Length: 490
Ligand SMILES: *Cc1c(COP(=O)(O)O)cnc(C)c1O
Image (tube, rainbow, N blue to C red):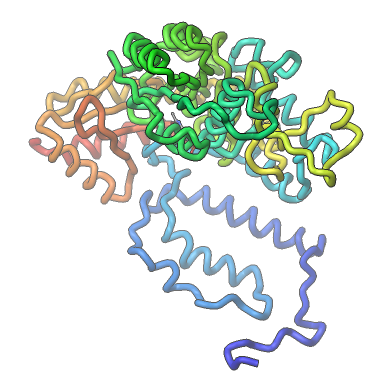
């Protein structure tokens, strides 16, 4: 035996059962307490981690332990090494990127899912896992006011994916299937040499480019369509699609973004849908962040305009709806192409329910085979908070963003780079990109808040996105005071 290799534990006392309900009861309470303490005190921590690369690793052993260690030691290391190495996404003054919000009921749903430990790849491998998911996505469709064609009771239906990126990839693969009939030609290979083409605005999320690469469309066949007044220009889209079709290429997939990542701009979906329809291209709506606001009827108009013409529509409850990561809701108007593209039924998965049809096998709606019971956290969040509380939070956030924008407007040193979009405000110092960048660095260096940046209208923009579960109006007021003080005489 190599000297480095310790002997395996030989005596029974060293063996700790991996699955001991009584021990779990005690340790589970301790971990829940630890999390509750974290939430209670997170406001006092610096929002952004300031550790240097390698710091975390250098403070932990380089090899895994041979003998069991007590939970208390592990939690002590979490306090000592893990917490300083975190950016605290649940900090009330976290305003960066988009929120990754969570809440008690969602975390408990996650715990239930882990505790049950089931695989929901097929209806037959855990019927409740599939049926609850179908039900809560029908609930959510109804709550958002999405068209009935996305309901599971018709040809469509919803599925939970890990992320908007995966949802978009699945939609693209379904679009390719519809355009090429790969399955029915039995080879699984596109025999047609004419390229398929994908369209999205210049401000669409980078996951479109990734999906085009993964799906074998080729990143070079992604057309980035310029914007007009914040959203994609439908006339430019029409020109690009006509030109491709005229040159013998196959326009296949159009992504409309409802709430761009940089500035929250909304594409004119009805006009885009009309152009896509002329070429029989699949229309996917990416509402990853902004979609949550459709819960409030007064915000619905621009968010849902054109949705009835979309083939797929997705948003992330894990951004602004208090369901912890990962939870992306994807609806399709017709599930045929999606299932045809992604289903595999090896012999060991054959079962009577699937063979008879009439059940959903969600492994046919996603890239991986196995899947977690993610519906539980969505179900528990909706049940234990109720829709009205979720709406009230979104309304608060939009109101506070409006108040923040009003304070910016009242200060001649600052300017808005776009109209506030829901709870997102993009702004800059009038004195230019350099001073804006410097202001961002300085506000983040205080540790009292976290903002991020983007390029908006060709300028360096500071971004303030409100959406954290612990954020109150006073935190927004405080970050404004900090910004105003640090801006000096800029
Ligand atoms: C955040 C975001 C995404 C990516 O979300 P993931 O779930 O992390 O893949 C895609 N599109 C838009 C518009 C987003 O804001």
